[in-house]
Length: 414
Image (cartoon, rainbow, N blue to C red; front, side, top):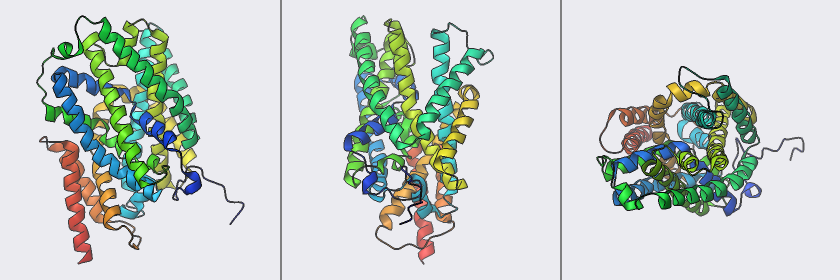
């Protein structure tokens, strides 16, 4: 063993060994914090407007099952192999072919990191500093808040899984407990009960369409599951922790968004807490909520760029954080729709990783430079996911990607 070799606690290019595995509680906190994202509350608002209470619950359940199957499979292979999304992609897409999924997920996660910064800075600038913030009127203080948040969040992502775990231990209980208390207080202070309040609105969505929103809200981020589940004790633990944490975390975010919408007309629990005169707690919950997801996003982006350019993960986290911070305000006002389009391109990547892993499990595989069946599958799946408006966009994309990959593998072997 070379004693001069620098130990990589994040196992960027190698499988996580036994010594690097985390406790089930630590993994649960990290995975739960991954789902704590304010954008999911926006989906909860849409669900509350379009569904009654029972339909809302069914949409959460159906969408949660689909997400559980997808992210659970990725959680299993991440924990069993100990490999990142990008290292798994090198096997299924080829050494240079893996640059495509690495670029896609790095780009989207850097984008969402920037959006998350603005989602913190803009409400705080409005409520705490009393500023008028509009697309054509961004006070200097808003940019300063973005810069401060960007530096702090980049710093914790820079130090990797250890600091992500610490942040999760602090943020997850605080957001879950304070958010739930605020939600209960909002219901108790309302004129009608939860079921009655849910009966208001257009109610024109439908359970299947609602479930589609549930799936779409997290299926792209869920593609990065192996980056974190690889630290679980074993495949079974990776599967169970992923399914339980994602199901619970997503459901909380949808509930927070739904309750804020039907009781105070806001976008998220931040506005509920403001209306309950819990101003400083509202800022704390908003910041911690975004911090956990932003750190996971930046960590994923760093791993992806490291695979493409060959630089250390820490350096690539710094680059991604700098870009996301500098572009945060522009991304928030101009790029959310584009990011949602890009989100639909990631599930085809995930399904190919899963299929390749299980089909070739235990086999000695020749390393390829590019596996064109995987490349074609992702491109075709992404096109279908964005252009076909029937059913679930992500499932449509995964089905086409799986079909293209399967046909390509058959042709290659024959």
